[in-house]
Amino acid sequence: MTIHIKTAEDLSKMQVVGKLAADVLEMIGPFVQPGVSTGELDNICHKYIVEEQNAIPAPLNYNGFPKSICTSVNHVICHGIPSDSKTLKSGDIINIDITVIKDGFHGDTSKMFCVGDTPSHAKRLIKVTQECLYKAIEIVKPGISLGDIGHTIQQHGEANNYSIVREYCGHGIGRIFHEEPQILHYGKPNTGTRLIEGMTFTIEPMLNAGTRYTKLSKKDGWAVTTKDRRLSAQWEHTMAVTSDGCKVFTLRSDEVL
Ligand code: MF3
Ligand code: CO
Ligand code: CO
Image (cartoon, rainbow, N blue to C red):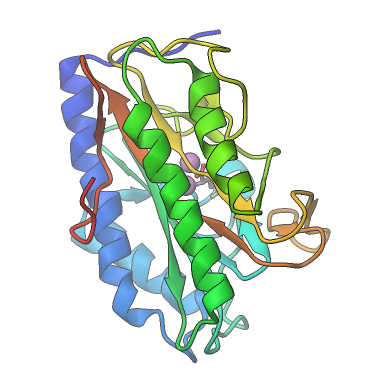
């Protein structure tokens, strides 16, 4: 069990790459419209990361993943593979998950987008999921436990009658895309590893409108869907534990924490 504690120099590199990942989400926003394919969104992000940012899209070839970003539409929870044949339509919701590598370090962040006219029940799921992420970020500081993070998310999600996905979690991040510790999005207060200054990890809650159970696509081996095919939402940030709280590396300009 090795949690890599980052040096000041590491943290400044993670701030740089975190900003790059956030910039990709800001750049792609205007392209998320009815009629666009997820394959086109992937192409645009790939080109931007490689040519404008001189960075590397981490998902490409990661354990055989074939594209540069993940696009998870409606009942797809996470790890959706972009495709030229998957065209967005009004009313869809989509998570775009961006991970960039620069100077050896990773920045990982995702957000939900509404395509055209989105039903209010879908907007509510998206909002509560983002609140779960923000509530968890608010409590991060040295001395709290990983169980406190999970409990905060589970509490808020379930209080709003949503279920929390358990099979996929947040993760330590740095020179390695997915490193220890695992950040579960459910749990009990005062349990598990305690946070210390210099830890870096993601929090990326996935909430379902129906049951929490998941299904892995037999077709592509990647896309994770809800078992009942009801909607799912996810938001993700990369952060570091500081002396008295945390620093979110992947903040966008539309956010105030
Ligand atoms: N970005 C995802 C995460 O939040 C991981 C994607 S791995 C891929 O951890 F291979 F599907 F790209
Ligand atoms: Co992640
Ligand atoms: Co991610």
